Image 1 (cartoon, rainbow, N blue to C red):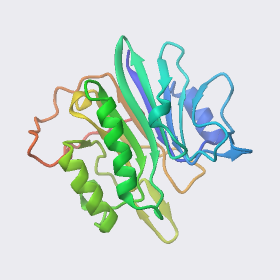
Image 2 (tube, rainbow, N blue to C red; image 1 turned 120 degrees about the horizontal axis):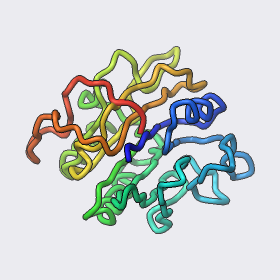
Image 3 (cartoon, rainbow, N blue to C red; image 1 turned 60 degrees about the vertical axis):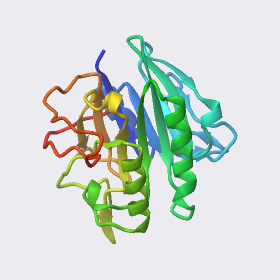
Length: 239
């Protein structure tokens, strides 16, 4: 099964319409709309994974009934929702994470440590609003980005983000690429067609699309000692 996935900052009517039109199977959302500590704007027919009774800033939504998923409560909290997803008998760990810019980034990196430990023998996908900037993911480098970059290299993780004329975040004050898609080596060739969508998002943050399950044998080999970034220029649509 080829799984279409979408990484998005907030849930809106535009997103739900796009989800149905393009047959999106999984949504990874940061800062969803919350009313009375409940995620809103998502049809009840979809499975929503989040932390109840909190002002959750992360969520995972699964629209495809053929995909099994279990919320990993021991790894999840308001700013990090982690699920074990089974696709065609293959299990992987998916995390939707929000890094608060006012919080020391080391706290969020410790959360990733726990996720990686749980997914040691499985593939792991991290979809993150990192509030961090680095030239490694086609931005300028700042202190938080440098720390995150060094951490990702130390853990031998791969940044799937591709260089693009668009950015993942844009306001009148400027633009940046703070949304990241990160994978372990088990999924390096299985997460493909990463792309910043030109669809209207009704947000300062753009929609990111990519596919899971279509092996990209054309990707150049990357050894564990090399930079964790893929330079191949290719459009990569929704998760």
